[in-house]
Image 1 (cartoon, rainbow, N blue to C red):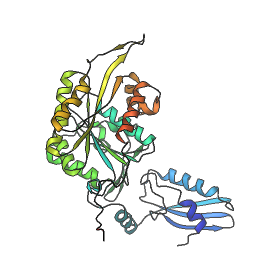
Image 2 (tube, rainbow, N blue to C red):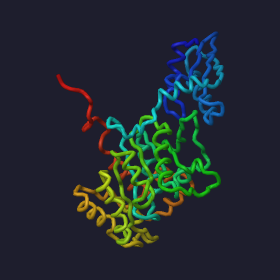
Image 3 (tube, helix red, strand yellow):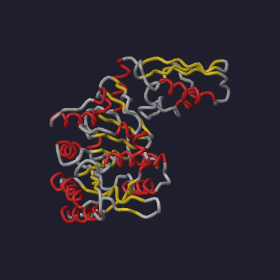
Image 4 (cartoon, helix red, strand yellow):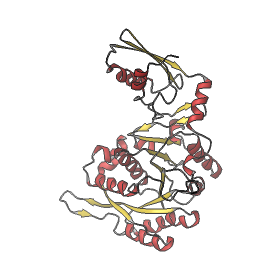
Length: 369
């Protein structure tokens, strides 16, 4: 294997589109030689049918074409051997849940609700995209196995994850790494599973899917306090919860149960989001279609139940563009960032991520001498 240092330095700027790490670190560059102005490079794909083949080709060519003395790029694509894939897998992950490790710096936030129809999934998709747009490394698990909707909301309903033997590489949408059971179910068929299967699915998402190093991992949780909510607390004991409700008093009462589960699971509720707070009419006035005050009331009740501060993170207006963005697969925070609802969602995402990623509060496993 021959590797020209100058070419290797340029190739280090090329990231694998799915693993989001330099191809040089992943052992994908087999050879890189400069001869008579031509850069002869061989790059090994993880699998023969790699869906990102064309992206890798264009990125490698672009990285090398700008080098002084390089007049031509001759790129050859090969495929990793089983042994090379096994080595790659071993360097990337283990069978443990990486986000449950006490030393993990990734914030894990579950977006919960007491019942369906409050816009929880739309808000989750928008929060994820807002965080990614702010430069954070974001992962999103569609944990609502029976009611999966995240792939459609992010514009990737037909995209399938890439498998590298037993490892799954999540698709990336709008800068967010995403996994959903919907990516494995053909023709929008229903998922008819009971508790143990639901737990196993979530466990596989957390162990077999390679998210890499994330700043934030969001989970779109199913409504209520069922099997998945319990599994999340077991598999991700350090996870936090955000509870979504509408202003309606009855909805806030139901949502209280979703937040109160933290008493039994030991999780922390970091805030409440009130969705569909009002509708702006053509004359500029507002109509409170679902009543008022549900979010503030829910936050107050959860503070009493949990004995900790639970802030109302924000109120999001009823906005037809929010629905339209979800149908089009381009969340509102990206399609119309100037809209009042998008501005509010971005503010909430920043409130959630305001706490810096760091070592504060973690056990470092060292003893002072």
